Amino acid sequence: MDGNWQIELERWLAPFAAALGHKTRARMCPAYIAGLIGPGDRKSIQPMAARDGGVSYDQLHHFIGSGVWDAAPLEAALRVEADKLVGGASAWLIIDDTALPKKGRHSVGVAPQYASGLGKTANCQSLVSVTLASQEVPVMVGLRLFLPETWTNDRKRMARAGVPKDRQTPLTKPEIAIEEIDRVIASGVRFGGVLADSGYGSSGPFRQALSKRGLLWAVGLSRRQNVYPADVTLIFPVAKTGKRRKYHIADRPPASAEAMLAGQKWRKISWRQGTKGLLACHFAACRVRLAEGHKHRMLDGRVQAMPGDDVWLVGERRSTGEQKYYVSNLRKRQPSTATRLAAPAATRSRRPSTSMAEVRVAG
Image (cartoon, rainbow, N blue to C red; front, side, top):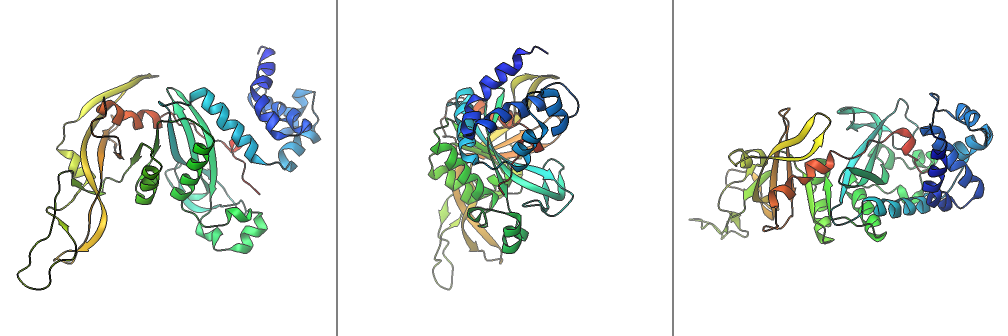
């Protein structure tokens, strides 16, 4: 390996080393990163320090194991560099989950919960990740630990684990995501829209918070989510007896997202060349109104949600037979609508994986 790569690495890491605000830490930072990505099979502290020659084991161990610094300046530097690399109107901000499987119970936030990487419930930490992606390049710009109720309901446990007081407030993952999006916006990072899977997209308050901020979004949705046709009408049925109805009701019943798209025309759209050929899926889209307005008890006793926001409903059929569903607030007459609506599948496929080395939990 060309020895100049270490010089280039130090140059690239300069903004982050400066954000550490300490000469020794600024020297340890490139040494540690070089140890992780450089030659040598063993990536623990002792062999990395031995290969470097310029730093001692104690210095490197203290930097990783005992060093305490404010992460905010590093995160700010990361967002600035990410914006330089991929920021712009064509970039997407991707909200997702990252799960870190664990064996014990003492790591902050660890509990039996759904692990997206494993596809099942497991003992793990769960984090809300924020990735800025454009073209073929994804850059993670935010990672926030989610605390389940088994932690937020136990103040003593959080105190023992060193959870900062400002992080002890119970928050759902969509609420955490909105806080992180606000942080990204405040830092001036440029992006054209927000993407998220159904774990976030099924939350009405999450979608409404995005719209309130004037953001375009395309988010996952359960195939069972009820929707109405876009031309549904609200009426006041006149009953033969009894009081006049207080609320409007829809003039027709809702259908699931899956059923609504079943009869639509599906179109094959490709977006880039992959390692095994052209990446393509079949898509269908139609305008709908989500069934998430006020709830009304029908004559048969069922509680039915009335029509809410007018959005695009998008279906994606993959070659494996898997089907995904999305909703988007893209405008009705947006140019190249079909291609724009297929963008979530193309962009979310570029999100980076997260390893243990990329995660630093406060406290």
